[in-house]
Length: 361
Image (cartoon, rainbow, N blue to C red; front, top):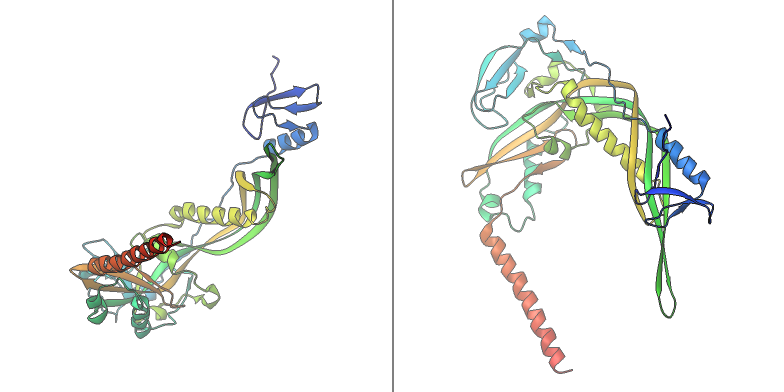
C-alpha cells in the first residue's frame, strides 16, 4: 500500500509542499519557506524524539536494630494522625503540627532506619530570635501581636526527606524567532524568522530533597531550603535526644513523581539559559533519560513554632541548620485601611497639585 508523506509547517502547523518556483518547501498558510536540508534536519530531530526515561534504584534502606528500637517511643496524634518518634527521655505533650495532645502508643518497630541526619546547629533561643526578626518592620502586623506576642510552643523536629541522586542526559528542542522591523516613508515592515533550536547535554543532580511527611507542606519545606548536605553524618539515635522525629508516611516510591518534576524543571531551566539571541523562545519537546539514580533516607532539622492571635493559630518553620525562617502573619485590617487612606490622600493631593499647576500654565 502506498503511503502519502505529509510535512507540517514548524511555524503554524499547516501542511507544506514543494514549490517549483523557489525550489523550496513552502507553507501556503504563512508563506514560510524551508530549504530541503533544513527540513531534513528538522525531520530527523522529530524522528529521534524519545519519551522521558526516569528510573530509580529501589531504596531498600536499613531497619532499626533491637537495641535502637528499645530506646525509642512512638506518639500518635488523635486529631491529625501524625506519628512522632523520640527517645524515651523526651516528653511529647502536644502535636507539633496541630497543637493537640498526643499519647504514647508503643515502641518503635518496622520502619526504615534513616541513612543520614543533619544535626541541629541552632537552638530554641535562635528560633525565638528568628520569629522576632520575621515580624520586625511589618507595618500591617497587628500591634498587639508584636507587643504581647507569646509563642505557644517551639518544637525541634527532624523531618524525613528522601534524597534523589541521578545523572540526566537531556535533549530539548525549542521553537525560536527573530523579529526585525524597519520602515520607509509609507510603511512599517516586520520580518519574523523562525528557528528550530536543539540542545543536547548531561547534568548531574545530587541530594534533590522531597519531603516524606504529609503533615509538612511541600511548599513550606521547600521554602526553608537549602540544607547543606556536606554537614550530614551517618545516622545515630543519639542525635534524636531531646528532639522529635516525624515518621515518614510518604514512601520513596510515592516521592519519585515530585523528584522527577523538580529535576525536569531544573534541567529545562538550565538548558534554556543557553538559548540566547532570539526574540522569543518556546520549548517544544524535552526528553530526559536517567542513569545511576539512587534514593536515600535522611532527617533534616526544623524548628516548628506556633503562636495564637484572636483564637487563630499561626505556624512558622525555621531551618535548624541555616536559620532561614518562613511563616504567615496576620493582617491588621484597621491598619491596612488607615495605611491605604494615607496613600490615597497623598495620591489625591498630588493629583490636585498637578491640576492646579496646569491651570496656571
